[in-house]
Image (cartoon, helix red, strand yellow):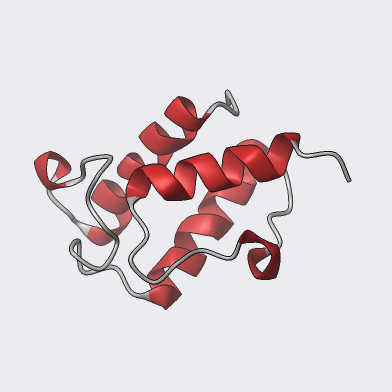
Length: 86
């Protein structure tokens, strides 16, 4: 899987649609996870799914996602973390 923010965003949308039954039309880049009815436990599940798709370990404690995080912000944060030097 491509590790760009755009590709990660597409995967997040796919996960939210297939795993949580959220209407694909509701899942926009600007939609907050809260607006979509996604709580912090769901975000962890999304991250675990992304770890499998990207074949990486995403340390949640290092991502520092805000409470009102958008789909796009999650994708960008993960992409930055994946390319950031250790």
